[in-house]
Image (cartoon, rainbow, N blue to C red):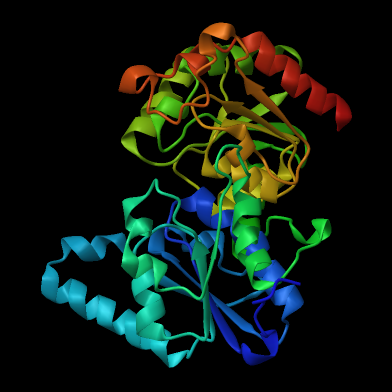
Length: 368
């Protein structure tokens, strides 16, 4: 037991703060479950951005999900201030005893001071982030935890380090991702599957896009993969976000195909996307939120990685295969840059051969 482990009997309510993107928020779900498992008497709330809330709503360990709308900052100082004040009042009314801040967002430091919890924890500054090096940050938390200085650590484990620092040690069986699609999402997906003649565990779910296109594989490669799957008798369902760039990429893939494919681009909510992938025989995609969602739904996953690290962001807790370049010319990966030389094109991804992805998928299909 660490010397300054917290006394959980003195904690009635806890707030977990994760102000990042969809996949990042989903990867906090094990930490929330572990906290509830070890302190079942505690009401656990979450604070996330509005657009990511579906990653945590209906999580069985969460009492309330509070949200910050990114649009507030575009509504003028008066309306933004009113919205921020309303949120602060709602959070203060909860009277938190514990605050767990899982990003380097400076809001976490201010929240600990404004909410005044007995205990608070965040990642320790290590000389690489000016925000976390500030005196405000250092003096805002009762506990801080380090990240590896040289080696890489998966984001799930990094989130769980916040709990370890407090004296809460998770078992391996507790580390699963938690994502609940809900009854409404399941009903809609079953109706869509019936409409398109798609059977449970008889299709491959391919989500070729990412919010960041430097993490994507060329449309021609995805088209070739889909054609090969069609020749072997596999049905494919395509999904993507409703944004113009993602729609355009899916359209380019479809233009290269010789046969129609089920395309649900832009027609599914996040919950519905999770429900769909739960019915798939396997999932194929890049480093993206849908990849993490497939892992959460225990769908065998093939994940293509380029500039980002599979050691940090790889599929968690699911049977999977990583496809990444091992060529000497790509020894720079994972570089975490937005394409080679900042070009938005990552050659370590674009040069991945279709045969390598096909082989990885065939391995998973043989297991299932």
